[in-house]
Image 1 (tube, one colour):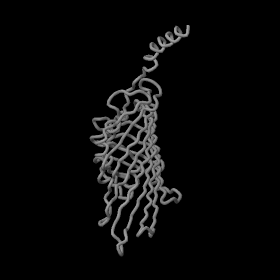
Image 2: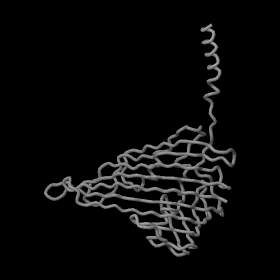
Image 3: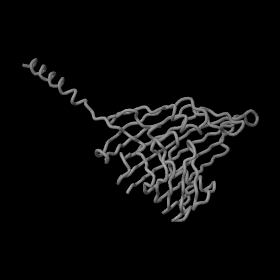
Image 4: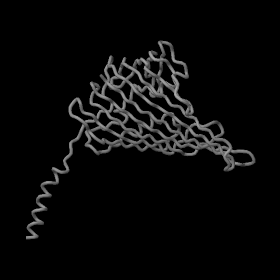
Length: 293
């Protein structure tokens, strides 16, 4: 009797296993193609902070923390797109644009109703106009933190998307060499890159489907450009991202979150043979919600 039960159980599991393991795979498009004239509302919060310490002979001689936070609320429209579906140019009408420096209360940076035009001009470069006049360096520095555009060659899908359908819970490795070439282009020398993406969940079906994704990118052995005479030590740069990506941009909401952290250091000869050590710990965050009517 026990043998019969064991054999029956084995037979049941043998037939049940394929059904239990079968998973639905989904095409994940991280770009969700834009169309010229498409209206949307943008709500963005971005921040950056850098902590710098200078030590001589192991004794701290200087310490500084600088921070900036920018929040944007605007009605926007796509003006032009790239062939890969990414956004090349957009116009925004500000509801609010506020800035806080070094923990001070936020203040209005530009008044409500200000017209902004943003255009992708390179891999990571953007140009801005403010009420049809070229943005000042200070204005451009603030706007680039809260206005996202794609590049001519690389969209989110090209950089981070899977090359085949994936199941919920499945991970994939994006093109790490391409990520290093694009996202890491301003970091200096990079020894290696590790990147992983994951499909966390799928909501809805058909055109209303939403992909919930997350991922990490690690740049290791980073040696950034430092002041003359300072030799960089290998450091790290890590980006953690997640998003809620709709299959299309009709009556849907797109959410993107990014946190990037960097740890760098450098050495230089000091007085009486003492070593001067520079350490920099930096963090940048961006939370974006795009709502489409």
